[in-house]
Image (cartoon, rainbow, N blue to C red):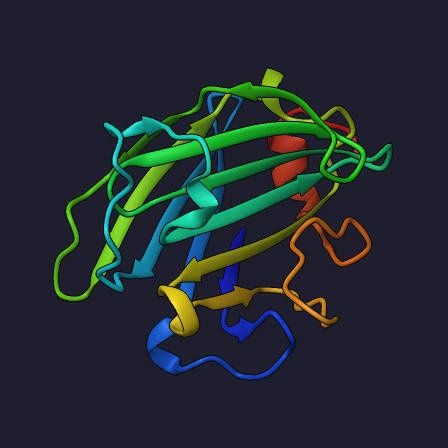
Length: 178
């Protein structure tokens, strides 16, 4: 299943150079996510690559995976190898921070690529819907992008009402029920 982030959070068009592609596949029962994104040159977080608190404050691509009972996984992936995976139950109600395998290639030719593997036990039971976002820039130049925009007074990515169904074939391959 391929996801495209090519709009700003409010629904207006982003620059063609900001387009991000996420490819989702089931491999050996796990969810594999491949990222192909522009590299905007934002500074890396001041931490070693791996699980990084507050990663949303840096250049990042985010995937939200929702189940019908308000459970969801927020997965954040950064161009420098940083990641953050949060299990939530209810909007912004953190249940746990979990680890996912993630490797990012060094940025080249203005783009970065990465691959994450999410164990099926980390996915919310009844997984059914998704949305994806990206953040880059600093200060007044900060930009918030969404695959499925959710307009409003300010960017808000924790919107279970602004999602799309996951591909049923992908869910079957993950051995999940929709």
